[in-house]
Image (cartoon, rainbow over all chains, first blue to last red; front, side, top):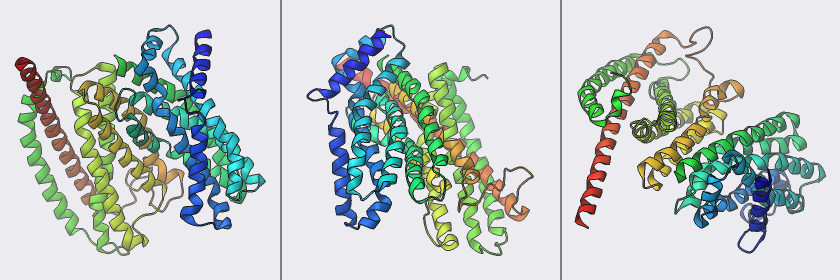
Length: 222
Length: 242
């Protein structure tokens, strides 16, 4: 247990230090959202309507940013070999690394989302619904992303491949995340229906992600 | 001859060389029958002659899913049993499956234009089929990015198994969501809802497409084995020179 806690603290420290890029995700999030009104025009009514979708899309892309270095950095400096030979179960190790990634990229996004939502003319109810869906849905993005990060661990063009592999798998999360955020504001479906499916997707990816990623890491390093 | 006997590539090659011409011949005969029946089938009273696109569309969709199914079983073969030919089978199936999925999407949109008034709608069945196509491209990208074939095989195998979640979503998308795409009409409780004059040509065409898939898959596996032999010979030659 202590080994896992130490790993969590280590990963978060690395993310917070120079070259870690924990807050670059939030910056990227802000930039993507800022670019959207330039592309579609500053129509506040339209922005209000598609705001949740823009924020979800930006969160999805921002989550991808730090993923490609998640295992690759450990692979480059050799600490991945130490982790693999260690006694902690690899599935748990991978899950802890995912948790660290979520705490350093997902959580800042959720905290920043209400502020950035103001730029898109979202009202209080929409903000709350969006924050809740992001809180429940972004772990799914991270844990699905783990699989891609593990597959692309030792590749030279890993980052590019990662996006191609992970994005199609995140389609259900995006669909139900945006559906729940919209349902809270305009209906006609009750908020609970897509929201519970979103919770289910997160829980399922919490199980599938670490197992598949650990299997991929074992195969890659062998 | 058991599956384990085929682990020897030479034995597989000799079997493939014997079987492929026969399978090719059967495929041609099945297509001759199927196309003949399809052309002879009466036009639909609403759709007119466009209903004939279905004779290409439905078997292509089936092969797109069969291709991923073959890849999933091969992935298990690679990861669990370490069968030497499993990764060859997985690699050979990917481009064929991708091609038929694309064919399914293209024929579907050509049919959709006159019938639905649009080439594309973001309906659950169409979207999940498009995601399947993207997943195929992702797997092919893995094969083309990792240089060492056995490592590429294991990475692709894990991705294949994760992507297999999309197959039931495609199959049941028309039942779970209220979609523009029609619901299941061949394999359903209470028998098919298609009139026999359309159903029989459709089934013959599906058989012909499946034979085509098996033939192409065996041929692609044979080519892949030969390609790997060439690679090994080149590596040996290169190390002999240096």
